[in-house]
Amino acid sequence: MGTMTPVQKGMVERKSYRLERFKIAFATTSTFEVLNSQFPIMEIFEMNNEKFAISTVQQAYEDWLIELRPTKRSNFIKDLDKLLSGDYVLVPIQPSKEMEQAGIGIVGFKARQAYKAMIAVAQGVTK
Image (cartoon, rainbow, N blue to C red; front, side):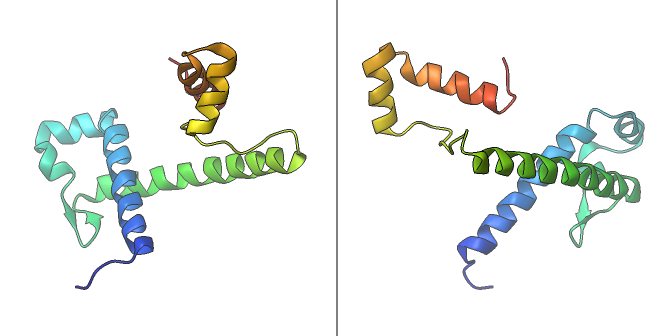
């Protein structure tokens, strides 16, 4: 197999990330507990031809993917509407050096921490 393009590599990485997120979520379910009483974890998450070998796990994965789609799409549309309203701007999760310097000039050396805290709140991530 030849070298992957950046797009192909990105797709593989997203799929891998999605599978890991599913495994973490699935491991908290009662279905997982039942399966884990019968199979080791490696067998529960074993894959054949890009599908989980155990049909119950594959079905749970497919259902999980369906649940994600409307949320992502509706959030994207809401976020796009906000951006187009002119009341919002698109900013990076990590501040650029210029942004950090501007913040330091106003609030001091805690500017980076303040920026990260504001981004976390905007993303709905609270500690």
